[in-house]
Image 1 (cartoon, rainbow, N blue to C red):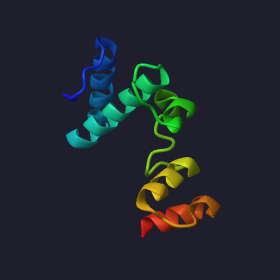
Image 2: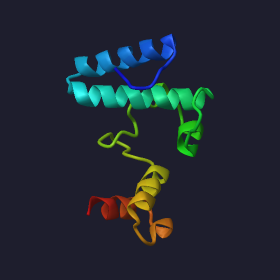
Image 3: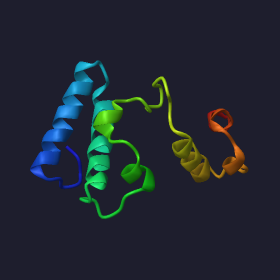
Image 4: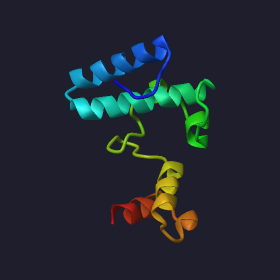
Length: 108
């Protein structure tokens, strides 16, 4: 069960996403993490969260995206997501890197 208090609707959404992922063969830990991230992103998109990132509010919704930008999906993460991670890791020159260069730098 997540630590934060969500509305009944968000709690149902969390359980639904978690159960669906477990049915797809994901581990319980991974299913919980993905479900919580999905619910938190939806909360941010609908103004229910106190704080939210730009990518949470301006990116396409989690339900529509359907894993297109998951870490192992066909499209992978967006350039913006890669730059955010590079910034967090302190990688120099990230603003001038293209997607492939960012992926290579983050893989090190």
